Image (cartoon, rainbow, N blue to C red; front, side, top):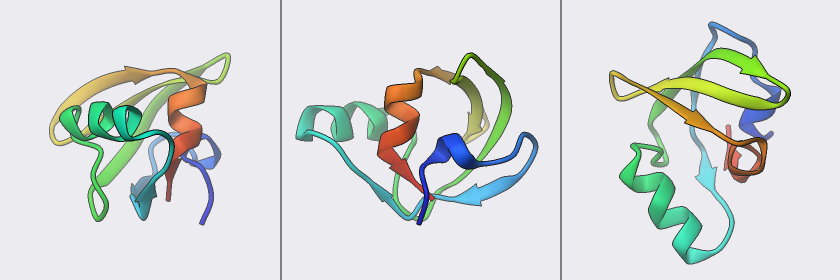
Length: 70
């Protein structure tokens, strides 16, 4: 497993696990980041990422992306 920040732009990756505090995990789940889900990185700017998840584009910080294990 590795953090989402290590994924290549345009690559579809499967979420293995969401780390962090309970409130962080719940917040990411409401955005569609769930174990078994597929995400792809649209772009990365200074470590912050825009990703496609569940047919939506979502911007997340580097800290959040590091909590998502792929």
